[in-house]
Image (cartoon, rainbow, N blue to C red; front, side, top):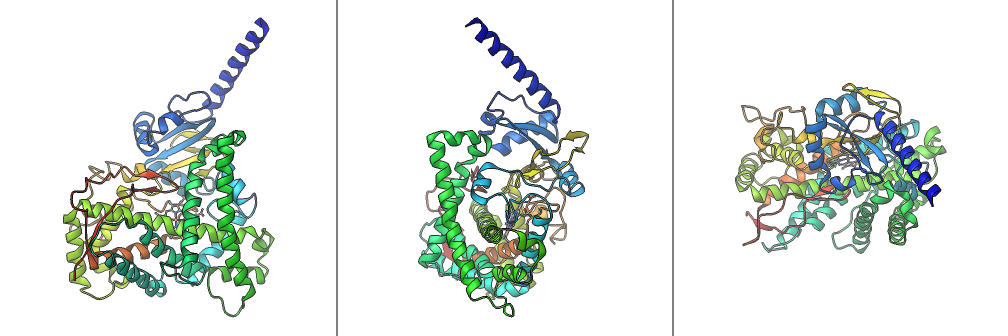
Amino acid sequence: MGLFFVVLVLLGVYLYVQNLRLRRKYPPGPRAWPIVGNLRELARGQHRVFAEWRLKYGDVFTVWLGPRPAVVLSGQDAVKEALLRHGDVFSSRPDLFVWRRTIGTRGKGIGTAPYGPEWKETRKVALTWLNTFGAGKQSLEPTIVQEAQDLVQVFKDKCGQPFDPTVSIGLSVANVICSVVFGRRFDHDDERFSHLMGLINRYLRTNTSSQALNIYPILRHVPSFRRKLKEVVTCSDDVRSFVIEVIQEHRETFDPNNIRDVIDGFLLEEHRGNRILSELPENNIFNVIRNLFLAGTDTTATTLRWALLYLVMNPNVQQKVQEEIDESLGKQAPSMLLREHLPYTEATIREAQRIRTILPSSLPHETTAPVTILGHQIPAGTFILPNLWSLHMDPKYWPDPERFDPTRFLDSDGQLAQRTESFLPFGTGPRRCLGEQLAKFELFLFFTSMLQQFTFKLPEGAPTPDTEGIFGLVFSPKPFEICALPRF
Ligand code: HEM
């Protein structure tokens, strides 16, 4: 018994010293507890806790996600120095347990792939074909406007009654990416589409609820976590079956002289014997398509929901947007060509993106070599969290940051100011969002179409909505209901 006690004490001292040594390799940060690290504090809301710690530890600090150190970069100096100036070192992604179980080890598509020639080539090809099919270009405008008009019709059918706009906005936005990637759209009541959207929602939900497994993979042996893992893998397999079926249909009808969409674009690369892509396993193309689909729906749809929420809470802003739309568009369909005549409208969209950053810590990055940022040494293989929220809430650039005020993005003549400082909703550097141009088109055309047709209000007697939001794969508003009152 005595010997056991001595061994236990020695083991404790050994682990303590090892831990001290390990901590010295990373920038300073809050005190971390054994095993859980800083997870208990972070449960209060990661972005808020990071804001407190930034004040205490500066722009580069370390938090412990269980046993794993993660360096948080806050403020535009740290984020730009790392992701832009040292973009080659900061552009990998961590190898997360749940990703590995659902995505596989090679052929990881785009968003989850480690830095290297395979990711570079896959990203380049995806971007080429997205551009070819009009993402972020005038040629896709009619498709987006049509989807926006269908959405308007769905809102009209609600006849001013309270409703939650989440599903209808999600379906409309998803249809845009479907047109570009799958070469087809679906009606809102299409069973196959509803099934796909249901799968995606389930996938996003289960993926979020299984995050603890990324920190403690050993938990997979605990029955409740084993069930969670099984659920996320099953869900991923279901989405996979759907996408693989669509890819198979494309293979069967593939004609190299008639490229119909992004899937065909990837098949053409294979057909031409693209050296890098043809060596990747079949699941690479599946992962690319899934990436585009997931990244292209929830992000844009959630931004539109935040924008609606802030408009119903700020009727004066809503009125100004409508006055501008009436003056510049009248009843004609919105068009990107007219965007410069709608500076206040565009500023309102940007303000919604600023005040509620849908990816507050971006996507996780990983360093590939030792590097120094603002005087702090960071080892190779470090998990990095670019704290975009800190840029958008920095009172130095955005006084009274919780106030919703689109005029922040306007100059003294009421024109759109090129405010690039401390504003990076799409990230920056080599991993910058691939769909930025497409998203900007969608946000503008959907937002303008909705505001041209309706005045949005909270239901009679509804309490002031909560703007704290909920963390999923994206940071989204809590469910809320609105009334869409037709303006004409
Ligand atoms: C308002 C809408 C959107 C926002 C705010 C947004 C934001 C972001 C951010 C912050 C990242 C991470 C950048 C980084 O790791 O440093 C990202 C990555 C990505 N986004 Fe978006 N995004 C939006 C819409 C879209 C759309 C419509 C697409 C579809 C084409 C898309 C495709 C991607 C992809 C594929 C990546 C991974 C890039 C890579 O790892 O190389 N996003 N996005």
